[in-house]
Length: 131
Image (cartoon, rainbow, N blue to C red; front, top):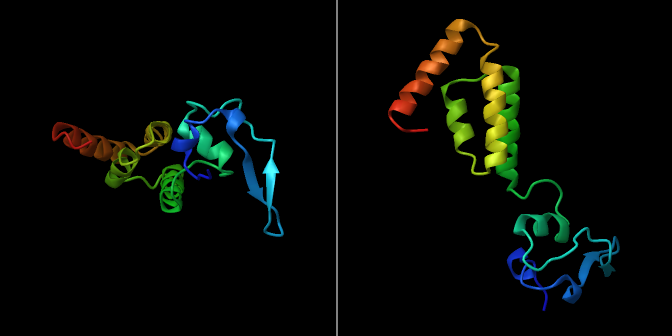
């Protein structure tokens, strides 16, 4: 059986799995250097990254670009009332929490007037339960 599914792979013990990759000439080669101790009942995201030769985090390219753009926006201090909405839209809790922390740190460096405006907008959203 051949699969590109980490869900199926997590049901198969490592000793029963042969990993293959493509050589530069397009032919296949068997890989023995996979960094997994076990595939059976393994974390699906870990399997995706390690067993399917993905670089970086397993999210779509559009989402990755939006997160990078959001990070750059926060770093530059160009945050507005939509920045927090964009952060809360992110489903991955680790990425979301990192961006929230960056947002909070950057907000502290803004002028008092800008900080008050952002905090009032955030409070209004919280009161309306929209965050």
